[in-house]
Length: 158
Image (tube, rainbow, N blue to C red; front, side):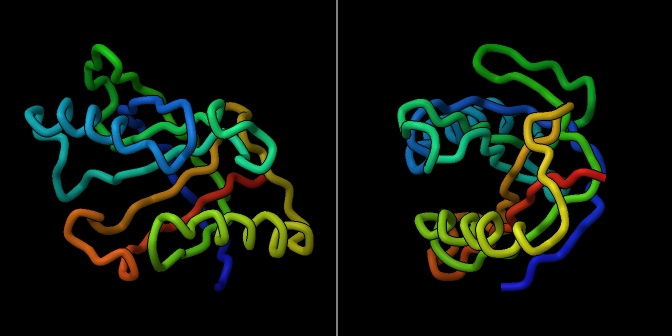
């Protein structure tokens, strides 16, 4: 697995927050898609992201926070459980994960435990809208688990 540094532009997103084990976030995605679909927001330019706020090795699973996100034009009105935020741009360490979502934890560990300590870079999660996030490149309902592609993003200090 090869880690790259990527300059990411700020992204405005609509999201639904899930609190609990990361592997149980499907309800948040369902709520977000039910809201976004009729508004025409699920289209070829939309990016599907998962903002991961907690380290499941440090935070009890029932307290882990995850935001199911879709990029939307700034100023898009939100309602109900759907909120909006901007994921700040800047330098991010990125790693492409190929395979089932259940194995994402192994790729996150590779990034944080193997690459980061020897990289000379510092992480800035939770500061000024910078969060670690996953970008889902294909649809899990139409893709075999072993063929799923997810890019992990970790915000770095400038």
